Image 1 (cartoon, helix red, strand yellow):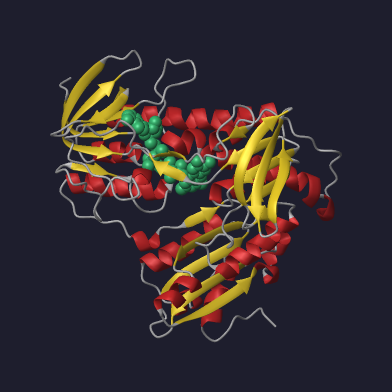
Image 2 (cartoon, rainbow, N blue to C red; image 1 turned 120 degrees about the vertical axis):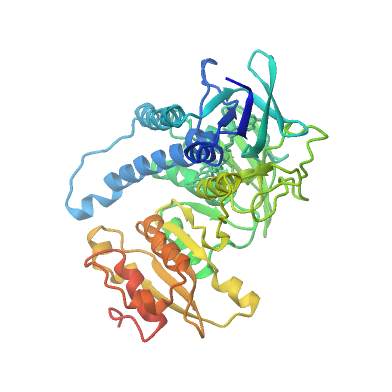
Length: 474
Ligand code: FAD
C-alpha cells in the first residue's frame, strides 16, 4: 500500500477513532496513528483515554459500587434482605478490564471493517502535512497526506505540592487500579473526575475527604442544582472541604500526610491513598516540528477556528487538545465535522448544545446556560423546577432526590438551559439537548405527552412550571 493518504489522524481516542471510521465511510483513504501499547508491549491499543482509563472504566466502577452501596444501605428499606454484602475488588477490576478490552478490541474490528489503516507508533507533524511515526523499537517512517487531523487528547495535570508517588499519590488512572479499598482516601479537586472517583471508593467503604481550593462548589453548574447535589453528597459521607488549598504532601509509614490551608489556617490530614484530580492539560509534547505551521493558544491548546482548522492549511485538530469542554462526545462530534468538511460537506458543531454529566449519585447533568451566566449577561429569563420527591417513578425506584430545572427566555420562551440532578440525569438531559437543538420553547415541552409513570414526567412538570405552573405540587 502507498504511504500517501487522504487523511492521517494522530490519536485513536473518541475524537480520532470516530473521525477515522467516518472518514473511511465517506470514501476517504484514512490512516490512524496511535502509540498506546498493551501491557505486554506487543499490541496497539485503540480507544484513547476514554475507553482505556477514562469514561468507560470509571463508569464500570461507578455502576458496581452503586449496586454495592444499594445492597448495603438501600435494599433493607425495600424489604430485600441480604446478609453482609462484601466486595471482591479483584473481581470488580476483572470485570472493568473485561469491558475495556471488549470495547477497545471492537474499535480494531471497526477499523478493519471500514478499511482504516492503523499505524502503531508515535506521530509527529512535520511541514507540508507529513507525519513522522516512530515505533516502539525507535524506527521512524514518514507518511504523507492531503489532510492531517491531530487528536492527541490530554494528560492529568500534576501539582508541585503533590507529586505522583507510586502506590500512594496517584492520578485518575491510578485511582481506577487500587487493589483494595483504602481506609482513608484523600482527593484533591472537587471537579467531575474527583467527585466520580471519590464516590466509587466512598461507596465501597473508604472515608473520603475532598479538598477543593475554590470557595464555590461546581462553579460551572447551575448553583441551585449544585447546592442540591452537594447536600446529597454530604449525606452520603463525602467530606467536601471548599477553600482548602493543598500546600504539601509527604509519605511516611505507609501513609500520605497532606497539609492544606483553609479559612482557619494550616491543617494536616493523613490518608492511605491520595488522588490528584485537578484537571487535564492538552497533549502536545514532542508533537509539532518547528516548521509544522501549527500554533498553540495562550493556554497551550492547539489553536483552531470554529471548524477545527489550525493555522496550517490542511491540518485540523479536535477533542481535548483544542479549546472547549474536555468531553468524549465533543471530541467525536468535532471528528465527524472535520472529515465531513474534508469530504466537501459544510457541517458545524453546535457548541451551545453539548451536554455535561457528572456520574455521581444523584447524577448531575446539564446543557445550555445556568442562571448565574444569564444574570451576568443581563438576559431576561424565567425558570421552572420540579423535584423528583414528587415523582412516583423516582419514589418506586427509591431515588426520589434532586430536581429538573428549565430556564427559558422571558419573551420568546425558547429554552436556554436545562439542568437535572437526580436519578438517570445523564439520560434525561438528552431531552433537553434535543429540545434545544430543535429550538423548542418551554411550552413545546409542556404540550408534549409523557408516559406515566416515568422520571421524564419531571421534565414535563418543570416545563409546565415555566408557564402556568406544575400540576403535582402543593
Ligand atoms: P484521548 O481520548 O485522550 O485520545 C488521545 C489518543 O492520542 C490517546 O490514545 C493517545 O495515546 C494518543 N496519542 C497522543 N499523542 C500521540 C502521538 N504523538 N502519536 C500517536 N498517538 C498519540 N468524558 C466524557 O465525555 N464522559 C465521561 O464520562 C468521562 N469520564 C472520564 C473519566 C476519567 C477518569 C477521565 C480521565 C476522563 C473522562 N472523560 C469523560 C474525558 C474523556 O476521556 C476525554 O474528553 C476524551 O477521551 C477526549 O478524547 P480525545 O480523542 O480528544 O483524546
